[in-house]
Image (cartoon, rainbow, N blue to C red; front, side):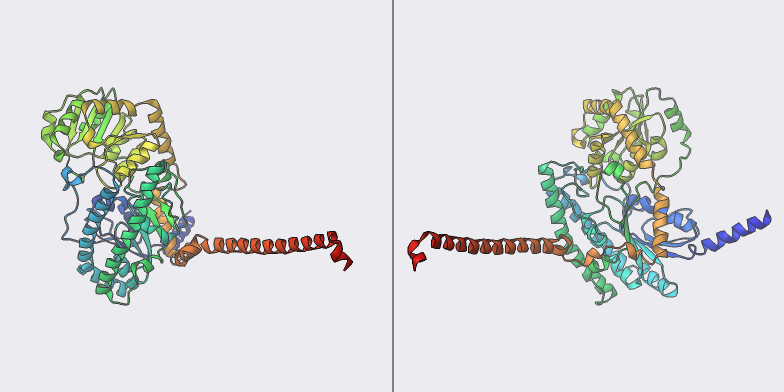
Length: 524
């Protein structure tokens, strides 16, 4: 028996040798906590599996694994409860508003780029790579690609990761078709089922954004060449070398989309095993005979900054419900105003509470993490989006029949009551369970999937066999315009030749007929 155990241990040590020595670099530039926490479980799991993981970000992690190394950026406050509702206005999805939001994000990204590129942490990364090279880089994909200059200097394989729907500028390098006819723009309010007007707006948004992004790439090129030298290729050329991309979505709720070998859906990476709920909240949940409505609009925006008349409507609307309401609200004085069926708390363990069997519905802002938790727990949802991809998530849940959008400025006590009754209908509850089943039941868990692909990419030297060669094709070749042109020219030529032959044949036949019927010509 001891001999068998020794053999098994030897095999385990031998096998782990192939994965424990990998050095992995992770690059974040956006200070949003939700972006970081979407993928932190992957980095932590890689560290636990023996890899040396170095993470450049704005987020400090308490109690991280010993193989997890932090390089912290500074000088930008982490976006956490620092945004007020007046900063979100206007609350619409017009073509202008979407581009205004994207341009605001780019202005922030320019600031982030300048700080990151001139941070001493970049020099530390280059020095560490000279001493012991990194094996792979995982890089955030959002609004800018300036880190590709650093990746080119390191000369290693890299994997992109998107914390929300993949923006269209990242399609081409991974051979992903650009189909605005049924793939909605990342910041739009459409699902995959669009009418003619929506498809037109979606097409204009996608194409105009990709055009504007060329300016962003030009600015990135200027800055990375200042930092790393004029011999650095443009970011568009470096991007073609990407091994694959992780996207924090899943077809179960986002709908059908074209996929390629290089796009891996990993929605639910942050879902963790259930943990005990604080005693006070547990008692409320367990004793809620009519069920619970959980209300939480995330941590980035201050709930208390909401217009006062809407706060009053919320209080009145909750009082009309037979459900127990658990309301995440950072101002503790609100508890003195609300009715007896409402419990307010400045913080809560959202996933654990949401999955409690007595929670019947969730009122959310539609953030990506909250949306994934809604789907995971299989709860009907009211969605009140404020910004960015929250509108897209609202449209997706609505199209799946498990959620309904209620705009912030339209909130009244009566509409709250009506919305809750609507999402408690049996068909909505059943739709939520159906989507949850699809999201949960996969060949591998999201974490296992992501870890496997990182290790596989390292083992294969960058997943070269899975890369698309289409990145170097001209647009007319990619869309077979040359082949179609050749076929059309051939058909036109064949038609012309056939017409000429038929004309000559017709002339010959006519001449013979005239000779037969003309006696004079025949006599002569």
